Amino acid sequence: MAELRLGVLGGTFNPIHLGHLVLAESFRERLALDRVLFVPAGTPPHKRAEALAPALHRYAMTALAVAGHPGFAVSDVEVRRPGPSYSVETVETLASEWGGARLFFLMGSDTFLDLPTWRTPERLTAWATLAVGHRAGDEFRPAAAAAQAVLGRLGRRGWRRVPPEPGESADAVHAIAPDEVLLVEVQSLPVSAREIRRRLTVGQSIRYLVPLPVAEYIAHQRLYSAEPG
Image (cartoon, rainbow, N blue to C red):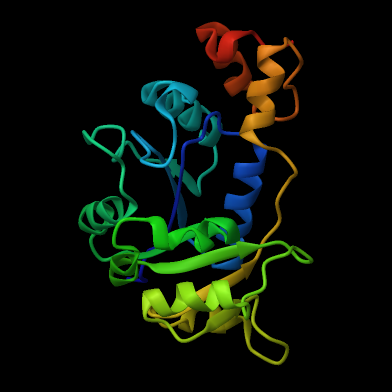
């Protein structure tokens, strides 16, 4: 039986929007993932609690957003766990729950540079391959001192670029070593949860920024202080 390739995409998803979904789909295709598991944070240690919708609402919105996609799923591993949501504990739990699967921890380049502020980030690489998404032409420079410092903290020497370099076979994606840090060219949309929340507080439309079921849920639950227009 072929090894299950499982991408883990964490976030507050406050709320989840089309940018998250496009990013996840791009990771799924680039890394030949069998599934992308969305993990809404329960109590994120780096976010102010008063700025967040309750965890159960964020979980429900994420479940609505990914419903119907055979390659997407949502996990309540952080929502059901008390205390701060530390990613290393999440990945350890998922590695146990999905025994035999190969885990890829998916993140943006800005998140990668913040890794030194996380709890024992070097332990992440014991359980999952790190995949760092960047858009063509963005400002992230993997050779820059900041990026190299994070690699050093993780005990890694360099990057493997995805898609493969010219001349490499597409099958190279399946041969990536577990201890490599991947630099993945991804697609994304210029959509932010902060802007969505701002628009809701002033009564502006969020149509085409979030999936319709998510917009309906926000309106029904009266989240973020106002209904979408």
